Image (cartoon, rainbow over all chains, first blue to last red; front, side):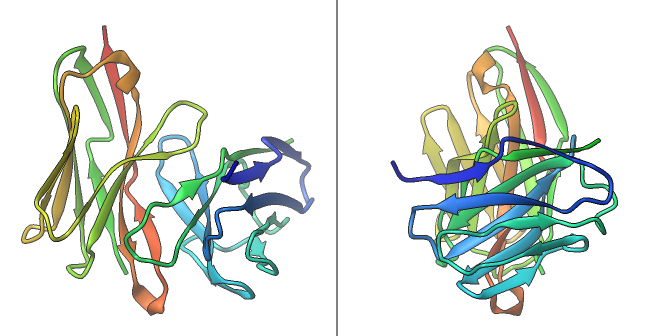
Length: 113
Length: 114
C-alpha cells in the first residue's frame, strides 16, 4: 500500500524539549516537504528537500531542523528555539516535476504542555 | 518568489447553490495550479488541477478556470452538498533558487448548509 506516513499522530512537548516528527514515504518521490498549519491559516513551508542529503529552508525555518539521509525519510525536529511550536504539522512528497500532485501525510498535532 | 492570495477566507452557501473561490498569483512563469480539499482533522487531498496551456477544466461538479493575463484562477463548485464542507487551498509552484516547491493560499473555509 503506497503512501506517506507521519508519526506520531499526537505529540506533547514540554517547554525546552526537542521533539522529532517522523515522515516516511514509499512512493519513490525525490521531493519532500514540511508544512505548518495554524488555525485559520494556510500551509506555511518550513523545509523542503529535492534530493537525498540536500534540503532548503522555507519561509518559517527558524527553530526547526531536518535531515534527508534516505530518499524515503524526512524527519523534522522542533527545537527549543521554536517559541510557539503548537500547531498541526504536515509532511508531503512529490516528484521533482514542477507540475505534479503533492501527497500529504495525515499530520502530527504538536502541543506544548 | 511566488506569492498566492486566496479569497474569501470563509464562504457559507445553501445546499444546491454554487460556490466560487478565487486565487491570484504573482509569478507569470507559473504553469501549474492545483486545488486541495482538507476535511476537518484530515490531510489535504488534490481535487483538481490545471496546467497553463488550458483555460478551464471540469470534473463533475467542480471546475477550475485560469486567466493567465490577469494571473488568477478560480475553483467553481456547482450544486453544493453538505459533504463539500471543508477547507479549500489553492497553490502555485515557486521555482526561485532553482528549487521547486508549492506555495499555498491561506485557505477558504466552505460551509454548505442543508
